Image 1 (cartoon, rainbow, N blue to C red):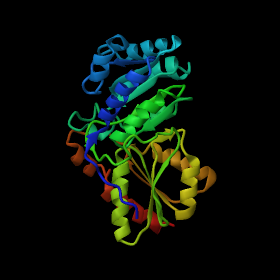
Image 2: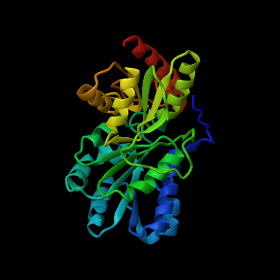
Image 3: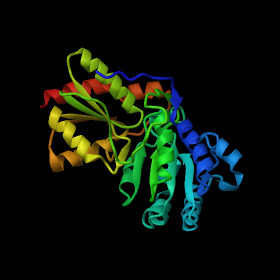
Length: 317
């Protein structure tokens, strides 16, 4: 069984900030817009180094999306930054009409996603944003798992022509993917091979999936673990190949089970290779105020929940 080491907990939003800083130095067409949350999005260094390419729009997210769409016409590559709730729900009409429908090269970068936003509570803890964004034609949807992968994804999406939704989080989480690793949009990462169950995870749940695989291995259960960082386009071949070997699947995500990664995987399997599936996700509910750890435990978004789901789905084979 392959071992992954946590090299030190880091927040994924810092990965975005550092990736954006690097882009500022290497790509003069990259511009950044922020809705009054420069510090929270870790965009300070880009602002300091490139003030002529940084636009503070204030608490006016819809205006920010419209400005970003307009900038693409002149060849700029705009990166917008605010909380995931304000990046999607508050501005969905502007994204649909001015970005997705028009095919504009806007990078919508969303921090503080999911319930690990924590104490700010349900009004800020968006758990439906993946569903909102993946339903938009032409929208690429990326949900990264740690600091290193978020930095790599930020750099990679600047080279991708078309609208992108990049989702990341607030808390410090395990940093375990390779430093300066390559990021290939739409290509799943096989972290662990296994024969008894496939665990497909995204975002903060990828590390939890690896921890779950360790526990399962101690119980004599061989679990494959796949990191799906790109939810759209989804790597169907990787999913089908693994599930053909294991015969069942658990999906794990910090999102509502309605509209998230799990539903996308279900569609792939229904069309190509039907198999039992269990969902580790929030169950059609809003969150509440609490620490990230408390909320992940209460809503069943951790290694313990993945282990239970794996044993349950194996029994269904």
